[in-house]
Image (cartoon, rainbow, N blue to C red; front, side, top):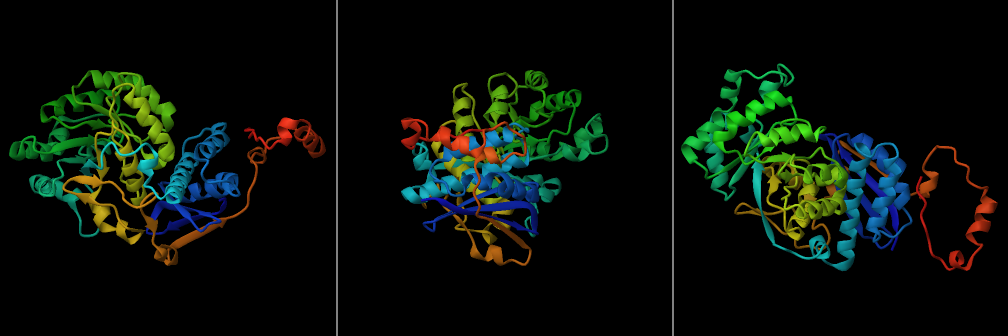
Length: 419
């Protein structure tokens, strides 16, 4: 089996969302996804990484990951390049599972569980307005989650007050105002529901220190990205100031950046986003690295529907996954318009996928949408031809002479050279 073409699909309704489908000569199609800068990711897939995969065996997932990563690493591997790698990696795992007729988590070592607790990140979509409602009646919103068996939620109470000063100064009256919903939940419901604080890295360290101290009596589940993760020493100071776990977080890319927070006292929870940080292959490695340091992982979501399926396979096969992020508004609001089947959340748990591979597929109607942009690639190139740099390679005739010069090379063994 070989990869014959790679297809990307963007939709105007969600301009940051991009799906990727990897086609094979057997008719099997692997599905992947990522979010943010979709048109830039599209270019990365078709101009850089797609040509490395076309004509090759989709089963060699680790080899393909290394080929793509090394191509991007010399220019800085973050951003669109890594999101493209993430989406392609998920699609390759989807194909492998379909070939073996097994869910991906069974290939990753089998289930350590068959469901995982979720917490709900409050959102807004159409008639689902819990992200607004929590400011009007926080107890009702929390109780609606508890009624469904969901015992954790996440909100971003301090984002609004960070806007005026870009997170450089914190006024006590402002902080009291934004913490009112959490105080009401604690007054009425006690600790029946966990509440995580996500600050989206909007604060400097002195203000973040004030926030964690003020919130300490409210016993949040964790603080996520109060400050930017660019400096783990600042995170050490933040974690030292509170008994609440610091979660670091979705903007850390690959095992290499997560390692610094896993191996130091800078955080107590690591939170990789699977569709940004390197796909299923990389998050499995991050989970193993974290387990060696007795650290739990809590995969990040709030992107598209494919991520939830991919994260479900990580959650089922990785013992130190503590909980999975979930967005009730998007799950019920629009995910079902794009994939079939949808994932299942039951009694507060994300259930294990049961179908082979990823466990879902892109609806055929998505490509027919009037706001859909579909692009296809079917040409292959070697890794060393993917750069515009000038290299002192021998001329082609001498390369052929070298390749055919020994029995070892004639025997068909293959090496891939990366620039």
